[in-house]
Image (cartoon, rainbow, N blue to C red):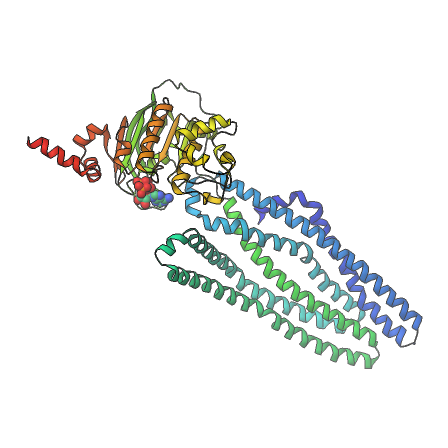
Length: 583
Ligand SMILES: Nc1ncnc2c1ncn2[C@@H]1O[C@H](COP(=O)(O)OP(=O)(O)OP(=O)(O)O)[C@@H](O)[C@H]1O
């Protein structure tokens, strides 16, 4: 929680005025029973109507001022809590952007969504209530006790006995429920995760008729959350009957004791009413305090979860400026004994990989599913740092590049095409915000996406829906390729990004890339041997190891894994080879 307090610093005035006005309201609340006592003991006993009317007007005035104080306190508390939550949400979002993929993989998207939405809302609620009620309730409890002492010490002693017992009950229940609130948020993460998975994968679920099982999974997660919530709710609900029981017992004892004092002539009837009113105020405030503490506990648990994201820092650091060095080498990318293991994964995804690529070359990367192709190109883009060995870009260790410089040099088209809500032009401008329409069309031409855009209403102004769901898979892929090309990167990485394209378009794309991106070093990850066949260099991966490097012809001669992949896709060529050998 302390980590989050800095975001309240712009709302110091509000954080002071909200409890201040609440305390002013309390002063009036505490005077009311005294005025009522005077109405009974002076006005009614002496049958003085004017006095009663005067006191009644005083009561009305106090109520009006109390109400104004309450509204003002509410206003300032809302301003502080809403402003605070906005700042925390923004800072949390900004902080998440600074985390590396390793931290993002470890935390997971679902919990991050819950933390930035539900958890921050809970903290906002807690702050709002805390600013208004945290001081008010103890102030009223203590104030009412002081007033009771001023009226009659012997009766006030009952208050002194009852209040600590109530505190013990309230706090014992709190102690039990605090850890449970954290558990509730954990379950909420799980339900959010399932919701996301089921909604994003709804087409697959229907295609495989898995509606029933996904509904069953969701129901059971939801039920677990409900049960836990009910359990916590039941524990919290114990508070009211227990506090009421104790307070009512104290009230009965108070009236009994006050009756004796009235008979002895030490107390007037009006004062008994005042004492009773103070006891009632204490009941109300203790119950409010109890539910306030429940809300605050919840908020604290959520604040801890938010703060734990803030306390994570990126395991990846970048220099402010790219270290000055000569860029004269003609080697664009080099791997030296690179190994990589994902955080928490048992086995390495890449083991001792070494190769080098000349500037302007086209490199094909091929291998079976899960062989480490994406992992390899992710290391070039520095999405992850190698766990052993080094990656070099233009002869310089990739860790010596500033973040912006590295980002400017590399254009990545990830395996999963991601587009954002906005026009096609907006999405393409991610590559270069200053690109002219001519440059955008040029990139679209190379990416074989001109037809796609021209067919859409408004062309570059066509509105893409969230996640690009109003485009086909192939259209999305072409637009993401164009987006990377708009950047004119010196290194272009296409991670299986033509998989949804038909063969003719795939071939046209490769030809266009070859013709228009002459100086660009291109990495083409593909499962299709035909897509990488013409590459200057082909890397063959198998279970994280580099088992072949060379041109298509070299590999076809010497690399058994490449032969296996190639001939499985072109069986007629294996037969052709056999026939030639026989002749
Ligand atoms: N974020 C991750 N956390 C843990 N393990 C991962 C992660 N991403 C990939 N892996 C593992 O690393 C290995 C290599 O994965 P990678 O995605 O690089 O393979 P690939 O060759 O690109 O596969 P495909 O052709 O199916 O895309 C796999 O065993 C995979 O399970």
